[in-house]
Image (tube, rainbow, N blue to C red; front, side, top):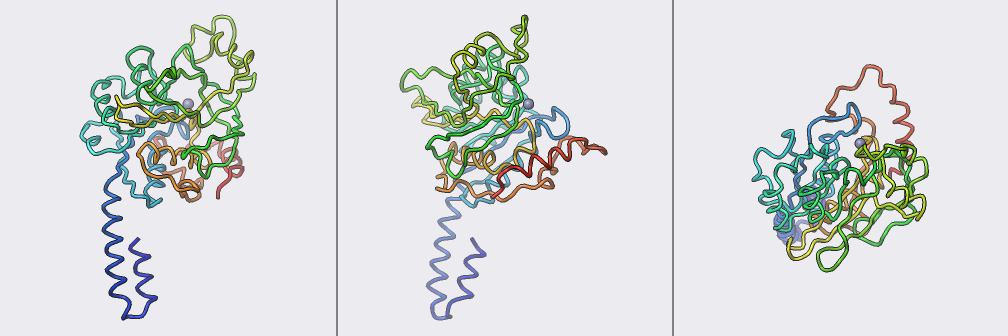
Length: 338
Ligand SMILES: [Zn+2]
């Protein structure tokens, strides 16, 4: 903003520069006031799956960087306390919270449901990414239903790795500037969603695809004893009823949560997937949307992400012999970048 103001001043005659300077200062003031309004707090869980998977902190930092660079008045804070923020006052003036962490019984929100529910009831947005969409059935899951409309419920939802083809996208701010795409990821599906009964909230599927049969290969006698591997309900839904599975969704809460917004995204197991403009923009759009920032018609601006960008802020050092490097580079080369 300041740079463009200087350009204007350099290119006009001196006698016009004073009014333009005043105008520019007013613009700067308005922009500055707006910029201070929207704070997004990322909460990244502790290190997890090894190099280039579940890179909670690196993923959060990358997204935060792109949100700030979009110049839409979003300020970000990335909390890496290894769990729930040690200073919860970070949420006091937040417009939205993004949680990327290992979930289930270890989800970093599980021990602070009441405290965090008070944040949510103020209307603060919440996005949960990948394993961060999984919590336990019962009080934690019930809160997730109220905050983001759905969650990965152990013994109901599944976590296979598959190539999802997203052929149709809904008309929604979150899909602006996103083209249909396909991506290999650990796309969790058969999520537990809040029942759409009335004014309690509205779920909008954002990314949906029919999983291939090979995502059922773990479905053998005894599978129900594993919390992630499958159950007969999944087979009924996918193999028999051919129901598209929603792996990203938007949630508009009701009056009881001051009309806050939620978002769930089950992908991003593989860190290189942030190099996909479509996947990245979709999540950036979603974060803007839950923070109640207008998403530009063409979607959030986002510069190209290279392997060097992805190598930053990793939880684990790059292995001396990284056997997946070529595979990762090949995958990145196939994403749409611009
Ligand atoms: Zn994963």
